[in-house]
Amino acid sequence: MLDAELKSKINQLWDKFWSGGIANPLNAIEQMSYLLFMKRLEDEDIKEQQNSKLTGEQYKSVFGGRDNCKWSYWTKLPADKILDHVNKVVFPFLKDLGEEDSMYQEYMKDATFIIPTPSLLIEATRIINSMHIKEQNQDTQGDIYEHLLKELTTSGKNGQFRTPRHIIRMMVELADPKFGNRICDPACGTAGFLVHAYEHILKANTSPDLIKEDTEGHVYNFRADKLGTIQLEALREDMLHGYDFDQTMVRISLMNMMMHGITKPNIKRLNTLSPRYSEKSKYNVILANPPFKGAIDESDMSDRFTIKSKKTELLFLELMYDILSSSGKCAVIVPDGVLFGSSRAHKAIRKKILEHCRLDAVISMPAGVFKPYSGVSTGVLLFTRGEPTEKVWFYKMEADGYSLDDKRTRIDGKGDIPDIISKFKNRRKEKFEDRKAKCFYVPIDEIRDNDYDLSINKYQEIEYEEIEYAPPKEILDSIIQLNKKIETSVVELHNMMK
Image (cartoon, rainbow, N blue to C red; front, side):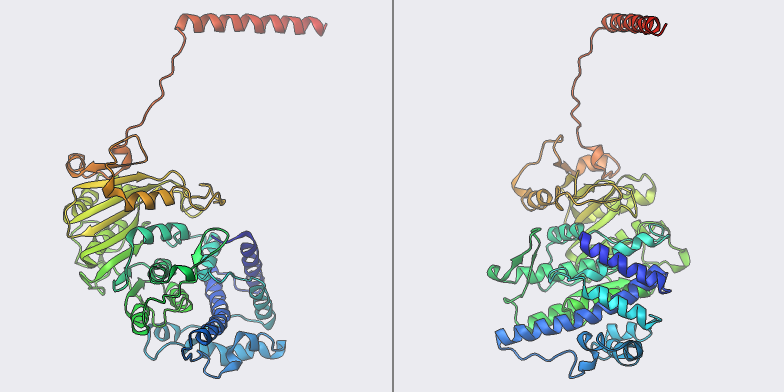
């Protein structure tokens, strides 16, 4: 979530783009991302140079002597030169970053810089300079995308809304990816899950005395001092994989990952439900919030699926099962309908997960977590492939730290999340037998008997407070007495008005 000051700056930026002729929000976010990437590129370069002086390690600047491509250089150019310089010098440099034949170069080769006037470019750079983005708020591009998405009239129809950062952090914490894991998001959007998985691994391999914390309790400065150079290279180049069918999202996610130090991001433009995607049993960890609004055309659907459905939310679940390695873990957001839907396809996918995986948890989230884009209730499924399910841990999240209306006003930014993480990690040490509590276990046999229903409402016991009412005759007498008082008052009022 963006703070109020940053939101105000982004709104200013949006207004400038709108009045400057770039009214399509996706075009706007793409162009803003390029500018932010240019700015952060120099900021990160300066930071890495300073770190190299402290560690004694040799650092090679990403600019390679091309100082005229630095933000600090070209943003000071006069109005009659700045746009031409960015078009002919800076943007070509930006497109050529990354290794030859890398995913970044492949998907950036057709990118275009479409800011039309020097005045718009100058105003945009001025606003970005005034943002003062916190060092730890590195997922800024995605946050801007989330904020701008309010302008999209198709929001919620194509599933293209972004997962709140605190929900991603919770899911990453629960899945707990480790160094050496192959991690995948088969519908990655802006790569938020992959970025947070990367930071989770960095944090786990950073000495505690190096980690910093901001005023809101968010930790940062994950230096990964416990990992060697070769290990860090493997983490950045081989362990994080994402797919998305939208070209703009692919570009944004590539830049997002590169700004986080992931030097060779593995993001591909591909519909993972299509016949073109054929990976199986490959990933140790899957983190995802796939599109769950709509159906896929049968001609575009892979023949790998055994679930007879065109619903993307069901197909993605089977896909994730399919690409998990043995003992691989998945944390995925699903709409509530997946948990209790009565169609054959709904029951079949739930049965597959329960019988062929160990379903570790079902976390029911309140309607409102995805507002203003969608008011649908959702849940998080956590499962491990290849191990039998004996019992399932259910948790009913009642608060996520923000108001559940369209404004999503920050309350404490946490809600039930710390409790969920703590109880999940210690779930094997407790019995969780109280069905009236927020969390409890349900044995697999009971779930089978209920057609594999995974709705928490099916199993949670609601404690009703017994209210004692007066006998009907007393209530009737009270009503008669009250009517008499009203009639008397009306008569008295009428007499006073004579």
